[in-house]
Length: 339
Ligand code: SF4
Image (cartoon, rainbow, N blue to C red; front, top):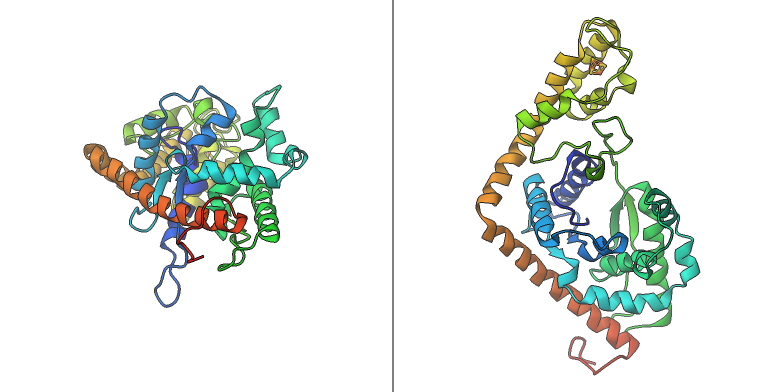
């Protein structure tokens, strides 16, 4: 995830919930189903703009939200891309394994260029799926949890891994890289408070994970509803209402049916409906707020979590790069595989 500061509900439902579920998933014998690594993609921030603000502060704000939402640094190292030099090194090597025309055909890139109204691309932006390949393969990731729109990127990673393995063989480990599989996550995107397709900081239509209940209530008052429901007793259409889409995510199923019926019949007004929705969101966020307060009161703890995560990540990355160099016959012989 790019470090863009405090996270909002869209990040929570779109990514964090899945990460934490995957981190905590157990096999039948009680062992962990996955080893998980969570990357703070600070280099990626630079691919679309150099005006990134204070990346360090944004990183800490985001990390506190991760921890509050249940990312457990004992189980999952958390680390910054820029602090593990091997990301840049592997990116450079991978850049030799893919053509620029292949990257120009990347459909996600085309969408970004259109959405951001860009008339030209920097070289690093064209190559960001190559950097992502390095991010994944440095840790020999074999499963990548993604939404549908990210599948083309995982495909590029697979192509790069295949090309490397076809070209270079390590005398001890054989193929250095796995070909990672995308794991399509049930990924629920939240619409913004203004009814726009996406909750997004730049659109100013968000509820932050760190918003106190009063703030959630205040923001909810301005949420877009069914414009045909003007008076309390007018019948409404929950299927087109932003607030109802939040209810679907944050309200218990037994309450949901009553809200839908109340909206359609006109027995429920938008003011009461929004109040209930705010309360349900805030009760979901309450444990996160409490954990957030703990981390905010202990900034050294957060810093140490990052440093420890980076130490663990660096060890893995260093080992992979040794294998890469040995397979490619770059540099000196090393002791990693007693060659
Ligand atoms: S009653 Fe609730 S679901 Fe119906 S339009 Fe108003 S806010 Fe939306």
